[in-house]
Length: 73
Image (tube, rainbow, N blue to C red; front, side, top):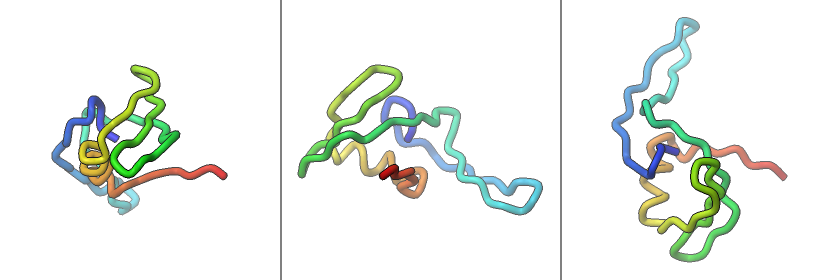
C-alpha cells in the first residue's frame, strides 16, 4: 500500500542481480485486511489502528504495487 491512501507514481528499477523491483516511494506502507463488504475494506493500520476504507479508494492504491499481498492461512 501507499501511506495515507495516496496514489504514487511508480518508478520501478532493476536491482544489481537483474530483478525488477516495484517501487513507488517514498510512501510504502503495510496494512492488514481484516474484513471486506461489497463497498468497503476493514484495515488494521499500524499507524492509525482499525479503519474502514472505501473499495473505490483501496483498489487503485493496491494496484500501485500490482495488488501485492501475503495471505496467511
